[in-house]
Image (cartoon, one colour):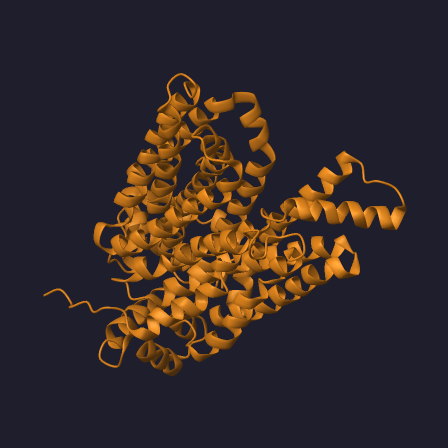
Length: 494
C-alpha cells in the first residue's frame, strides 16, 4: 500500500519563507530596483564628475559608467555562484545563508552612502557585493530546500525559490515607483533597502534546523539529523525520511563532496550535467529578456500613455508571481516533465504569434492588442515551466556528494548566459528587429525536444531512484556493472 502523504508542516512552510526572504528574493529585488532610478543615477554621475574634475562627463564615459553599475551585478553573481557551493559544504546550508547576509548589509551601506559622500565608486562596489549575495543565494537556497523537503512535496516547496524571486521582482517594481522610493531624492534609500530582507533572514532563519541530509551524510551526526527531521516532518512522519537519507548515506559511503571539475570527468553524471547546462542556458536564452525589452514598445503601440507604462509593467510582475504560485501547486501533481515541456512549447507558439503581430503592427488596429496579449502569455508560460522548474530539477538530478558542485556549475552557466544576453541582446534586436523572436522560438523548441527525449519524470522519486534512471543513459545495458566499477575506483582514490 502506498504511504499516506500529509500536507507540509508549519515548520516546513516557515523555513521556506525564512530561507527565501534573504535568498532569491534578493536577486529578484536587486535586478528590479536598478531600472527605476536610471536617470537620477546618471545625473548623480554627471554632478559628481563635474565637482571632482571641473568638467562635464562626456556621453560615452557616462554610458560606460552606467553600464558598469548595471552589469557588475552579474559579475558579482558569477563570483557568488563559484563560492556558494564551497560555503554550503564548509558552513552548512543554513550557515552559508546566514553569512551571506553580512555581504548584503555591507553592500546596502556602500550604496546608501555613495550619494552623500559623492563617491560613485561605492555604488559600483555595492552593486558588485549585492551580486555576490544574489549568486550565493541562488546556489544555496534551492540546495537547502531540496534537501529538507519530503519527496512527495519536494517540487512544491522547491518552487519557493521561484516564488520569492518573482516576489522580489514585483516588490522592486512597486517600491521603485516615483511615488515611493523611485524619486530623485529617495533613490539612495531604494538601493540600500536590500538590507531589510537580509536583516529579516538573520532574525528568523536561526530558529530553524540545518539540512538533515547535510547533518547525516556530510557531518555524520545522526542524532542532530533525527532532531531536524522531527522538527521538519513531525515525530510520526520523520522515520520514512530518515530511512531514505540512511540509504543514500550507505550508497555514498566514503565519498566526499565533489569538486565541480570532478563532475566533468565522471561518466556517472554525464547526462545529468549536460541536462543542467542545457536547461540553465535554455532558461536564460529563452527570449524572456527580449519580451521585457519589447514590452514598452508594445504597450505604447496599444495606446497606453508613456507615464502609465510603469504601472502596466507591474502587470508583468504580477503574472510572474501568479504563475510561480500556480506551478508550486501543480508540480507535485502534474509532474516536472509536463510543465517544463509545455512551458517551452507555449513560449515557441507565442514567439511565432508575436513575430507576425510585430511585423503587421500598423496594418490593423487590433494587432497591437494581440502583441500585448502575447507579452503576458509568454511571461505566464515562462513562469509555469522553465522559470520555476529548472532549479528544482537541478536539486533532484544529483546525489548529496555531487549536488553543491552541480549548483556551482549551474550558477556559473546561468550568470555567464545572463551577462552574454545583456551584452549581445541589443545587437540582436537592432540587427533582426522583430525577427529576433525567430531565434528564440527555435531555441525554445529545441530545449523542449531535448527534455522530452532525455529527462525522466522525477516526481515522488528518491535521489537514488533518479540516479538509477540516469545510469541507463550514462552506461546503457551495462549500467549496474559500470556503476560498481566506478564506485570501487573512487574508494581506491579516496
